[in-house]
Length: 452
Image 1: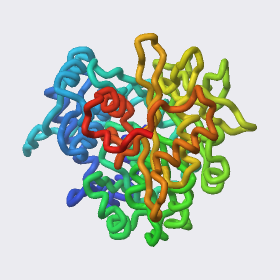
Image 2: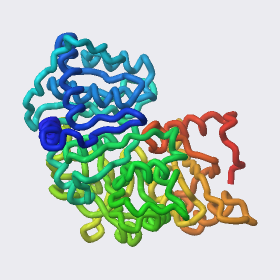
Image 3: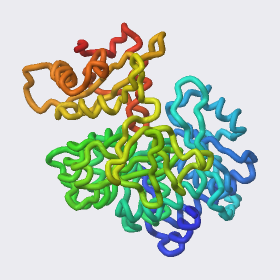
Image 4: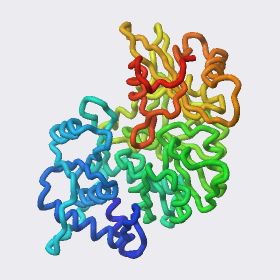
């Protein structure tokens, strides 16, 4: 399991750096001592089986997670976007202990032994996004993550020699998965923050980073012409579609790297992946099945047979995403919750977005539906643009003309807006709910461009 592997690395390479975050760092030997010391303190004072981690510093939450794992407790990361009422609702519903600050250490602190675990032990709850009600929890057991780790190492090209740069938004389960995987592997984690994005390239050079995990929006913040990072050997992207132009830039920036885009879901784990030239050649695909996964299309719904499915979804094996198989490659037709109805016609947001992305100036695009009283949707498109040069025709007009030529009338957006930046959740994914809220407020000053 995870802690046993960390303990093994600490025995063989005690002085190797395990974690680094700003000026704080832990060798593997120091990390084990910290885990056992915290676990000893929490063992005496926390009787609940579930703990909500709500410290302000990401490294503290990560250390608390490892300490709780040592005690066979399950944890929930309180995202910075959760309200106090949502956290309190979670605490009551899950009968959880709210851990908001580290207990002070003393010389009398007792180091707890790391308790043995099994594949079916639940250790992590992933929170779904929500704005009003208490978020839903998707529970992970060790099977759903640890059985994928050897394949992640092989597919992503990651070894114990790697130094991984990953964002400190650990409530996003893909970031946390990357961290725990590399600690399991015996590598070095370098946590960074979004506010330091302007210095990421320098940080990668100074810290001799060889591997990066980010969502596409965060790769865009540093991957550009003129940047050269020859030490990078593995780049992994997830969470949103990795567009061809960004993939080309990443491969130019790091010509020795293996670039992997993977598709998955919190409920189902890793589903498919594609790499390097495959990403460039198959723009609308999300690749072939991840090792150990079998993909089936049933009534256009994606179903998987996989050991990585979260325990409460075994037997369901779908999150109702829609897709089709092109030879052995999966093509997403629509993500769950992003299919809209217009006068009886089902419209997929991805189809419209993919058409918009055919124009090189479209950097990011989001299609949303505002529900009408008759339960049909008004479709809106919001995009941000790159500015390669002087343009004589407004981008909104160019985009509208392109969609008029490439989509039937029933699938045309009612209005198109150009925004400087699309709103995001703290883990970097586009916040579609924020877009809907903005568009629903007709007097909102955030709508800066004239409608097309």
